[in-house]
Length: 358
View 1 (cartoon, rainbow, N blue to C red):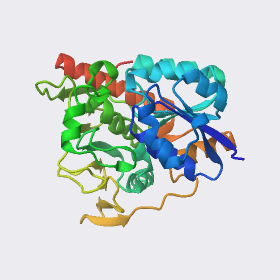
View 2: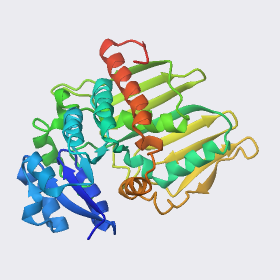
View 3: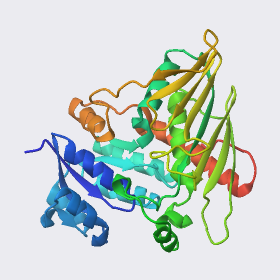
């Protein structure tokens, strides 16, 4: 009998399949149920994980009542995160929200408020937090290897959210183009667009790298493609009390970074008072410069330790030990990231620099 019963709520985000695989591979967890109003969205997961019919639901309350989960993983459209979190809180389970946090700061705060009376954890998962190179960069920054961190530069994205399914199964360009008119990813009202999809990575992990520091003001601009109502490219500049940081999101990179790094390369660059670090997505090393050793040199990425090898392992460990979440998964860290995202979106709409939204 598994120690933790876990349900998957909504298959709007393709990462649900990846998360279910982490549950299936965890020795103390089981997939107690999955839910989506559209049964077709669950077909692949049912097959991949041999989920029996009595654990597959198109009714939310039926799923929660039957499964009685310890943890619910939420992969809904961004605009639906707040509503679903409120419904999940009523069932008194821990909640795991796949990025991004929310469609707005107001929604993010509503989610935190809904969970607070339950005494249960709410984790906001940012998959780049489980990339060994970025975790190693954080260690080096905290150890003062590059002095005081002054600048965070982020460029990230992929060919587009419709080009891959769970387990990074590829989709043809023809299939992608056929889906754009109906997919929530390309609808403003559903929380679509590259800025909402990827800026949260840079803003939230950037907040983590900077030790919780908040910017003073934010300036952002986005592209405008005829026939597409959401952005596919955004550039955001954050001004801090010391230094500027730049965060760029892109749907339409030449290649997907988990297969072949595109140019520009996806990942982070950090500028400190005493050196620099380059940390690429999925790399086995980081590249470092210091005043003592100014030539760029590689430092191998630290292997992720047991208990922190992936999001499900980490969150279940925190639940077991009764410990709070830390780092990017902490809702308070993600809330500051959401404030940056909201300010950037408003800045792009109004075409002006704005102070960070409260």
